[in-house]
Image (cartoon, rainbow, N blue to C red):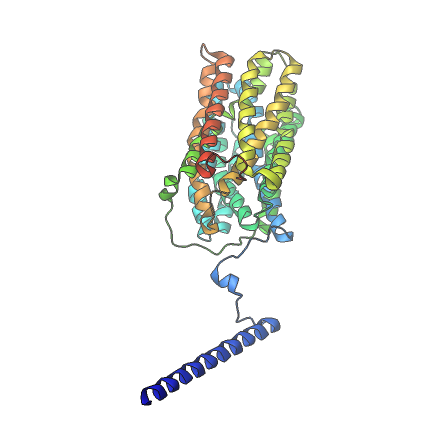
Length: 451
């Protein structure tokens, strides 16, 4: 009886303790709620304490980041995709081979991607703004020094190295912001950002075509520099990071390459970027030397190739968001880009060349627009987004560094333009096969899986 009485008392005490604890917890919760309602600055919502929370997937702040990314990509990729105009001009004025001149553009793209690991990790660590400011200064310094250049080595250092480093400090951090703001609308948001390549690729060659015969090379490039300066100031004023800094962590997360899907995707996109750019660099030269098109019309050809890209950069991402997912949508466009390059050798007329520029510009722009979204979908931890995206950018940097010079060397050899066209088309086809393997590694043989 004594033991039963003792046990009864012990149970009563435990019930009393639990009720007191519940009351205290309820009181604390009510007090916290009342503080939040009063806007007490000493309290922080739980989502802010634990992490960034669910991306808003819309709203003024989110879409503003897509807009400023559009401006940054106008200044980086729009300028790079306009290099075909400079390629033709430099070959004429400097007397260097097409392969020599293409190294200027290739180094620019290489540095844009290669610095992605450093700039992406700096963004994850909370240094977005200093990185952005440094990139702006170097990019504009390179553009304005290009306007003063008269020799090949000067152009190489200014347009290739200096502008390339600046672009690398801008591109990856800015693009890494978008996945932290969007989930369901991520592909269309990145498509809006990526269409900066189209607007830049249309406007900047147009500036060159209109201004170069009237005011000369120097002031033509300075006008481009002032346009870029205005866009960079707007971007710097509006850019906002959302994810808390991740101060501790490796510069390179090598364990990511142990994931079959991530590794196969990296290899596939390496081959894609190895083969996608020779057409942009050499279509103008092909037009003037093989089809006998005037320089002005060769510029128009590049403008069309870039301009039609607005369809490829917006429509496929829209359907990828709604129905298929970015990886499923990207693979067919890689295959179509490869097939269109295989058809290029059969074109020997001005009308056919303009048709090719339209088709290839639309297909290849879809590849460029969907690639960042497909890459972002391989990362679930938002605090590692910059690092893992930067790793892929650094990997494909070596593809962009060598792709167009190899293509130029083939043009200058016995292979000619035919060899260059088959070379680029085959690289894209190999890339498509690896991307298919990456998709199978992620979903198996299930065809109706959104990826």
